Length: 228
Image 1 (cartoon, rainbow, N blue to C red):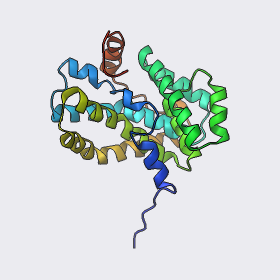
Image 2: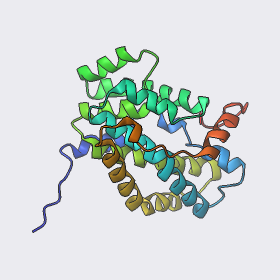
Image 3: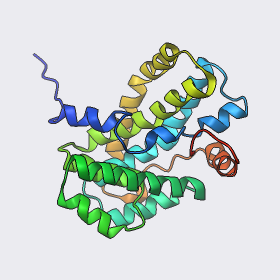
Image 4: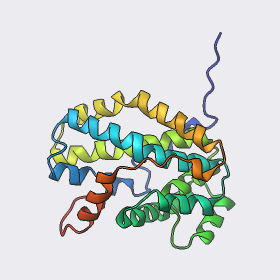
């Protein structure tokens, strides 16, 4: 009989990955708002293509950073690595804002000395995937758990935003997310493998230049629904 290993704290993983967890993610579309305005995403098929691209680039990168943070890799080195992998100043600033918001929520949900130390060490805010990794450890989760949460978040945000931006049928949007389940698992697995080397320079550097460019344009919009 084959025994399937399960996370030690499955419920904690569900809480952390829940879009209702007050970590600020609901205010971000992951670049989808700009894509919708440019008519690059107009229907479920285009949304799926957008999410696949995001998952295998920025999604893989943030999942690996989060897994590395949960594995005990030096946080200062990881913070520099996150900066280097985020060319857009607007997205770098957003990542740190999200990191601060996540840290506030995490310290309330899972009080731990490591989270207090993180707040002291990065008074301006650490990048969100680093905070996610430390939070996962405080919640009793491991690198694979947090990589899965990060990969999932990289596409669940755009899917949720698409319902508001396009008036997309929520059932169709959820179907897109469900269809990505296997891909999310594969990205999480690859992220953990990269983090396990302990070499920060070997972490994925997958980027999405169009997302970076449009993020800068989006930040200058006088009116917008989402922060990014």
